[in-house]
Image 1: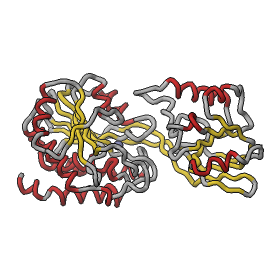
Image 2: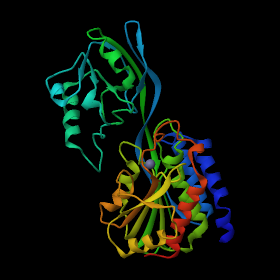
Image 3: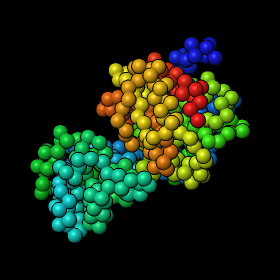
Length: 387
Ligand SMILES: [Zn+2]
């Protein structure tokens, strides 16, 4: 075992190179996603674990780019993920509050530009299974009612990333916002190439042949956002699971690895599928999402109260570089927390990982030694057998 621990960083580097550089973007249901899933099945199997990978249906999406212009003026826009194709020239209206939006009974024959408060943050998907935000639902409801031909959001991030949102949409960078608004009352010409594709995907679940209950679930998501190699989000988390699977072999009879496929997908299909199959008796869940970012520290957040969590806290004392973070909820541990299961979540702190969900989330942003530290920490937790 010591041998394996000492070659840990080399093992980590190998897995990261496959996931980030060889495979790259892994949005749920895409070709890269299926390649990553096959790699995970093979690696857990090679380490002696029993592997399951139940299929679910999902949508994926491809784009051929998009264009926006007003007369001779051109604007750079990005098609929002899952946007349908669109082509047309229409006058536009600008709304920056829900009250302004609600003055329009119909926006047929118009493009809708969202700015200010209405473009302040991305909208939750229409059918998101875990959370709803009332104010956003009001805005979305009004847009669906008024039926603009297409929506242009002024923000640095897509306002919509939703395969259930029927209206074509693009994102315009804030730096170009005032130039666009000055085009009124001339019409805008917008063209979006987008294709929704029916596909499927699977989680990867690995456990000993005779799993004993209650189990400790160690999880991470392997899907990514579109157009990112997903190094810190979340090839590092997946790699922690693979390294642990190799170190532990399946002798620890109460461990289940769950590699989720859907954390960055609008409909969380992997999470929904995991819940629908029944989770079984779980003593504790350990989620890893975003560890090992360079110039950050690994952090752990605790959810719930339980003697298991107290024992994990005492293991943490042996890892002085791992800090305790405030509880956060934007990842897969939340589905366990909502069932009252004690959980911990590991990430990099402080939180503002600017490269997340961008093409800049690359291998060189990873501190391999910090990924190894996360492996050693969880290894120690599991070996001390908190359940
Ligand atoms: Zn993530």
